[in-house]
Image 1 (cartoon, rainbow, N blue to C red):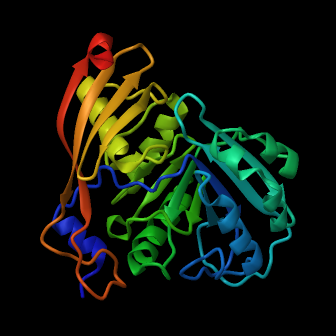
Image 2 (tube, one colour):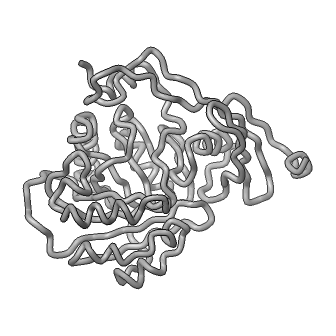
Image 3 (cartoon, one colour):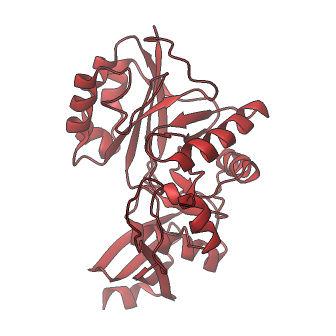
Length: 313
């Protein structure tokens, strides 16, 4: 069977509105091999991994493992691990870092507060502080989840690191194997599909300039998928690429059709109609799939700027 990413690319499946959703990302360094469910199938103590999954459930926090690009010989348990937490909701974006000798320290975090954008428990539990280095590019490389992530993701991560790009990490799972290589850029939380080195470099440069690169963008993880599609559509329609100035203010309706209100810091508002379609013909949604699927797609079918009085009516 052909690789899922090859088939998706050949069918020109849109990546719009396909990013994983999380208001806050919590990242723990874990070198060595990763299994399908990496939090409980790596050299991280599986009891700690299960406890982290349970603590994060329903809070808006997504926990993932990261490792440096390169060969992944089994190094045993590292003495010191890097930890990051990033909140991605526009207007309250932050990225903090810390180190720890004991991953169990992460269980002292207030996950509900982290999901809501409060970083105080990260400072208290881990002595964390604002990250002052380069923005982060997380490349999905978990081959146990999907071979496309291993073959394409590792190649991209290695290329970026070899060319001197700083802030590059491999990450366990970002969803959307068929869009490999997939990349998440922090702190703003925009995800990219079928990413190439030049796109990632431009996205990282954009973060430093406070702007969003929309080429190959799947969406911002702060929003549910209809909101991701709506926000990116407004960016293109309004020629507005500054980070942090657009927010999803309201989502009305349910699948397969939503009315999304997107707002600008300057007071402008847009109403965007997003419809859930079906990607045809059926294709493998992952390389491990035993049957073909017809994945959902987010189609922007209408977009108009509206006045405040129209919104109130």
